[in-house]
Structures are given as C-alpha cells and as structure tokens.
Length: 308
Image (cartoon, rainbow, N blue to C red):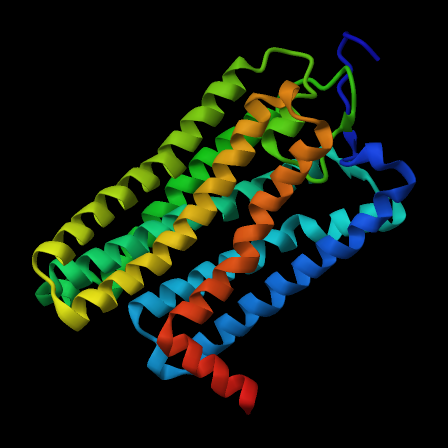
C-alpha cells in the first residue's frame, strides 16, 4: 500500500531475520542473560530490603538501580523470546508505542540514579558535616518528583509524535522490540521533527545527567587528593570507582547503540539489532554483580544469604 490515507496499525518485529531457520537458537543466550539479570537484581533488592544495616542512602540508591535493571528487560525480553521460539512477531501500533514508552521511560532512570549517586558521594566526601542535611528524605522526594516529571514529559512527547506518523510503506520492523528510531524509520512522511525532539530528549536527560555526574566526580577527586589521606582516601576512591565503572558501562552501551542508528548504513542489520539489545541487557546483568562484589556491606550480606 503506497500513499493515500492508509497507515499500518499492525507491525512485524523481525530482528535477526537473516539467520532464517537458525533464528530460534538466539532464544537460549538471551534467556540466560534475562535469567541472570532477574536473579541477580532480585537478590540485590531482597538483601537491601530485608537488612536494616543496608538502609543507608547509597544502598537504597543501589536498590533503586537494581529495580530499574530488573524492570527494563521485563518490558520486551519475554515477547522477544517468544518471537525467536514460535515466530510470534506481530505487534499492534498501540502495543508498539506502549512498549516504546516503557523501554525509554524506565531506561531514562539509569542516568538519573547515577546522578543521585554522584551527588551522594559529593556530599559524603566534599561536605561531610552537611551530609545528613543534604541526603534526607525531603530532598530525595523532590529529586524523584522532578526526575519523573522531566523524563516522563520528554518520553511522552517522543512517543506521541511517533504515534502520529503515517506508516503507509512497510510494516516490517528490522528489530526485536519497538525502539524509537526503529519504528520512526518505517514512516513514509517527514521525520525531521521526531529526530529533533529525540535529540533534545537525549540531551535534556542523558547528556545533562552525564555532565552533572562528571562535574561531581571532578570535585570529588579534587577533594580526595587535596584534603583526604590514608584509609579515608582509599575508601573514598574505592567507592567512587565502583560507581564510575557502572557509569562507564551504562554510557558506553548507550552511546554505542545511539551511534549504530546514526551510521546504520555502515553496520550490518544483525549487528545493529544486537547492539541495541545488548546495550540494555549488559548493564542490567553486570550492575548488580559489580555492586555486589565491590560494596563490602552488600557483599557480606549476600554471602550470609548464600550460606544460610
């Protein structure tokens, strides 16, 4: 169907279509990654929730990150696995937009929580005497409300604009879930506005958070090397290094996935789809492991849980 007033309301998600009959084999590695993410993040949330000694602001933030990492794959992995196994590739436009909203909305909180972690470390290391005034429930709730409103506003605008596009040329999406650019690339009208709004959303959420995080850690390390010494210095560096590792993994995966669509003609379709999926799954799988191994208090409680 070309032109006219016709617009598709049903789509087919056919990521990795070049594998043909071997596509079902992808079920197993992605299932293992999904199970790893689910088990690791659930264990981390359980330990932080049940152990009162882990109810410090930083551990609560780690628990919040684990909840985000637990929720993200749940939004699209089960349907993707069924698609690999049974070729259940169909999805309605409404279902696609709902999936897109939750993928981007939940994902936007990864950088927001990393920012709050950086601010927590800044308060603890640079202004320790004011830490309790800075990291209190009132400020946390204010930060949470502002973050939810900001992230939700931009994601809703992006999704609504995508939903208003005409899809009159093809309904076959070369992807395994409804990512924004994957759906918009199917439109037969102008997508300039969508691209601009998408860039603005990325800048106002991810880029702004990243810049604030970098500024915070510059001040933190300046304070460590100028003021701190001995054991307190080593402890501060160890704690900050843990968050920096998580931040680098998250932002590296996000930037790689973002660039893969900007230079998509230079990247094979299967590799582009793989990058887009892995950029979500890798942080979800490894964040709880990094926090579990490098945070002494959490590691000790996890060991007790395993030995019980």
